[in-house]
Length: 468
Image (cartoon, rainbow, N blue to C red):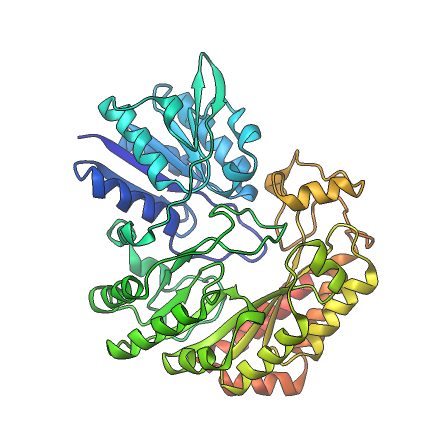
């Protein structure tokens, strides 16, 4: 029996959060759909608390015929370290890498000779064809779209693979390959919760917008699963796994309003009872009141709107082109519906002026938001934002990409405010936002589990002070 080991890497950041590794869970279920004889294991480094030595030990114990590693850009050094350690101990073991890092910095990542293969973009079909080639001798490497491979020691990257259009053809994630309950007591994406028993669910892939800071691993364009398939998944999660809370983590769940409303209608028709949160951000200027009413009816208690900047010039520059006036009204409407409202903001875009940063902060402070996240614009190599920074005369170094994250401005300075000052500005804004008595009362009134509040307030203040 052939064996495949899939590893989701991690590197601790200022605000470390956990979540089920949907990416490799989909890869595993897709492989099993076509090759049920495979023995597959998943390893999630973060919640399992594994060190590099632990990972290498697990590889040695399982002895896979193919090792797959998924990494974000800020985990690049961990990826290369693990690949080197595995090759040192098991030189004949083929290693394939994928994830956002590979997608945006493909050639740089694949210059590491310890990586035998790289999967760019959506991975299910490419990985299946690679496994068929390695294990069954089917096909040719140079014909596998989206694959990087070695030929006479030299790296080759095949043309990109078209994105899968029929997402209903995908099997559900391989829930059985993770310890579902392990995630219930861990700090999760978005921070707050109504129930411990939760699962992340992705109902669509891709985004029709062109924001320049995005890794675009699922491409530009909206590819939805059918409402019926989504609700079938929710039924299984509730009935088989006892899941009480759903985190929808789409890039743009509400892009197709009719579809989003249909999902809500089906949840009610099937008698499903969940608490629902959208921690990954909805598009605020395409939301309408009818959808908000339906979301409230199916148990939605928190919505995040990804706003990024209150500067019309920067909105245009990053190609988000958000209608700020409409978003402001949608925030107020969402609060009136009795739903907690969170906002995502980014500071320090290429060429951004101090006045524009302050405009963004003032938008947050004057809004009806219950919570905010201030991130720092980070020009990862391969993103359009990286090219924009270069075009403006900045030279963001990528030699230490793994040290970059969205929580501290560690990249080469790319805006008009010095890097050492940006965190101080954000810290003051954070404290002003949360130490507002009226806002604290509005938070208390809607918070799903009020026992969490003292701890979360302390975490917020502690995080703010870490910027100072």
